[in-house]
Length: 254
Image (cartoon, rainbow, N blue to C red):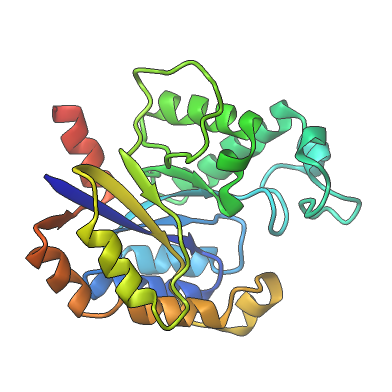
């Protein structure tokens, strides 16, 4: 069997991004999303989440945009004098305990708002790029019993039987003229099992432009993942689109 989770990153980044993600979900493309709890669109995302109960919502752990959820004193190695997350300081200077604290604080903000994360991933692929952050997130995912986005890099840590990850992960951008065709090629070549395809659909608003350089790219990705031909193509290929919530439940049954 071939299963695919199409996960839209950056839910909560801005209201316009939220609107695009929900549109892509309602069109049958996006099955899951991951939420940034410290960004300008967080409250709007909570409101929209109530209208799309079938959308699986995980935590998009963020250590690079905006301010921490924790108090500055609790995570001092992660922030600059302005109270914002570091954008250029080497991660080797970040204290693992501060990373753990901020992950717990972001998780708690989401659950306090009435949403329990269905999965866990990170903004800017931090857990893929950095072994320490990967270890912290593995521990959290296992403790909470949720899947963690697969890393394409082997960090050399001992394997854990309680760690849930999809069999594969596709990381690409879809803003060029050949993006739709390339996505369909990926789908035709999917390995058996469950693969996650990460994407960044959305619309552009002023709030987005203040925090991200990815603007028009999101609208181009939206045209790919909200295309009504996408679910048709998956059906014709015998691919089963599935959310992280459902995949986790089926994995538990197995």
